[in-house]
Image (cartoon, rainbow, N blue to C red; front, top):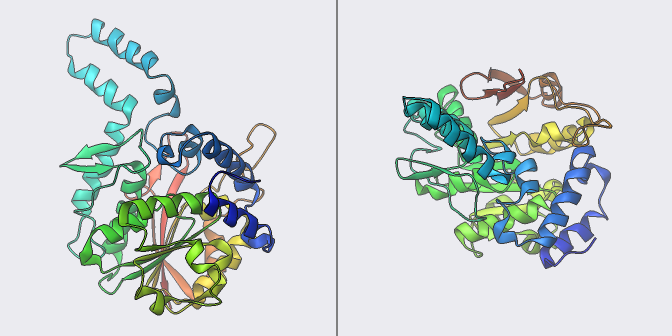
Length: 352
């Protein structure tokens, strides 16, 4: 498959030569194809507006149908407004439809849980790169669901352990680069960020972070693909962040302070996650912060194409990370319980 984007073509072509462990698994075989097709028809500068992106790696608080047919929902709001005397009721409905209420509730937890230490989360505001269709503003700061999810995760970490020494942070499957944006936007964090992903998402996150921080600051696959070793300490001297491909993870040399995975491990198959965990352990992070559905990702079926063959559960991480101990988990405060009873659970592991 070829596209109009040179870097994406290189990434896709090189991925075909890699072991299966570094290629898209069941869930992302389906998703990647749709995303590439949509990017080919559209402009990457609008990637956060695309329905496919919002279904796979640009999470939102509201239903995708709201922005697909907003006039219909606005009509319902107007009808409600005609039959209620207390106009605040209309405002509440509109804020529910737009996701504002859910976003504000997460923001309240973020403010209430803040601790004034690294990684700082109390100043950064999200960029508008990618033309987001859903972004909420509180106290002159912009937030998407992704931005609040990661910020809450970092606050959960700060509430639990001593994070004062955390500077080098690595992530696998980092969506469009939100964690990197949060860490790098506040200079007090003194952060260096590494993200490894498959195309096309790795291509999108490279675009996003370079647009936010400048091309000279963010290394992409073009900068790293010909290097035999990715020496973290050496690369820190040249870049603020690395955006590498999944098959480059074994080339990393050095030490990280924190490893993060939000959601994407649960979208992979167990053997792939176990392989990544093997290399994560070699980098000796002090802490590991994970977000995973307690009940596991839905399985692929004839009616549910975007699913996995075998769901990843919490016990799997315990087995895949033998040198780490689970010290706390949460799904009610910093995590999330869905309306249909699924628990998006945060888990923190410490090296033993």
